[in-house]
Length: 153
Length: 80
Image 1 (cartoon, each protein chain N blue to C red):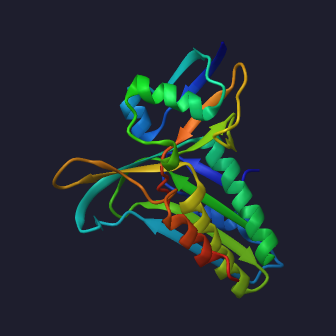
Image 2: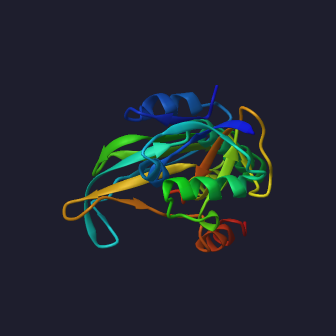
């Protein structure tokens, strides 16, 4: 079963949590990314996510493999929404389970940082005032810094 | 001539006015192919701002491609 899902519908967090539960794990760490009402000073009314699904899933699986190797976590899931989202909706959900909490926290942070950098997913923001625009978060020189930020562990 | 399919996402989809197209080309590398398409569709991004994937695997711009390949140019991403 795939650990990474690109979803057109709202994330069912109860099912995800149940899938991850296992007796050897005492730590469960979740990150949820929500649509915020402002971005860089502009009021956001909603946004559209689109993804290159096949590559987003394979690259997401690679990121989770890296997290398993690097931190020794037991398992993880990542769901990223596509389509029209409103303020307050969950755009991304990441759950990590491990025997102890420290590696769960660190792996969860690693996965969300790498997802933002590497998954072929695009976001078009709609504003209360003015024209909608594509948001560019990475590929640029800032990538190097982001990598530095997550690697020293 | 090589026949390939290109899928467009985000601003490239909007600028091309379509999600995919199948074309024949003489371009010898992905770099040269993007140059050809950039001219045709007036894409504003250059290769320094993009990544490229062939059959859902990231590739280098210098690499060639083959008959029937599916090629995707990847604008700056913004997941999360």
